[in-house]
Length: 370
Image (cartoon, rainbow, N blue to C red; front, side):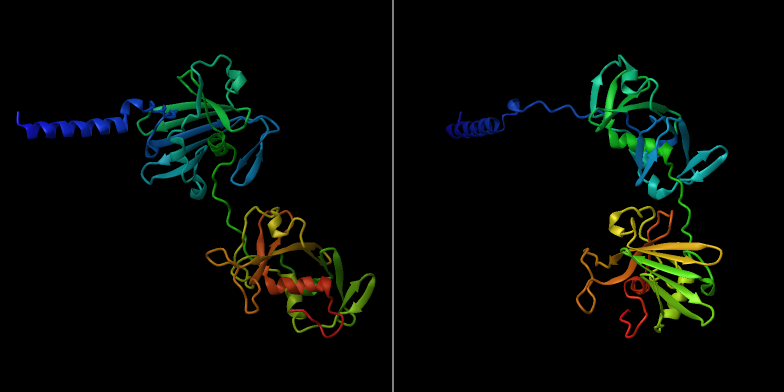
């Protein structure tokens, strides 16, 4: 053999041997078993869903920012896909109600197959121990081919991170993430109905000339205003003493506004919006308890509304927008009504004038209020 060719072959073999020693594929650990799927379905193929849930009395379920108290009563619901339009509907007897897409979006994908956290055993010796006899929840998923999958959900694990589950027709005991099980259970205890439209207009509507008393309380300070029909003047009662109101230029207009304080979308509300549909108890809004309470009474009835913290305007990066004086820009304050979970807003000037009626009653001049 040609000596040069021999040297070349030896050189190539040395290179391959060095590469083999470097990478050492025989020393690599065996790949870990992938977390198994309970089942796998194409989410577009799911056409029907039935959910039954029986929560233990005294427990509760967090669904879409609301807490649902469970009574132990069995509840069931069904969902059906309109293949022609690709839309999902809640089936209520003979009636079909289209789901609220903002809450429903992603649900078919969620149900297309959960990943199992652990396979605890190949057989379930005592199903009742895991809340699987009877099951807490029964879920049946049907594909467009007619193939169905039924699975049962049981109790949460002791660390509350997972829920026990079994697939009907399979004796294995699984655990799946608790948050996954919770979303499935919420489909029956809090179905994704379209919320009713907000009622726009006024917090209440009375003729301001019928107002017999206006009471404003701000951070513990209370001033009560009453009209005197004899001289057609208003009087402010502060610490048991009554003083004549010295009308400012905005007093008549503000008084009319107390007869018709506007909700978002009303004629005077800047921006026409609300900020939270059920967040009135969130401390950041300053509404529970309210910073300011306004009570308006006529001969027939009394009305209340509340003012809370200021809403700071921010830019796209979340930084406060500053006004001409370098202070955070405040255009509105948070507001609320009794027994209403919605957080509204009202014009900041209306709010500041209202607060002034409690902290600095207009009974003398000069009057320093916006």
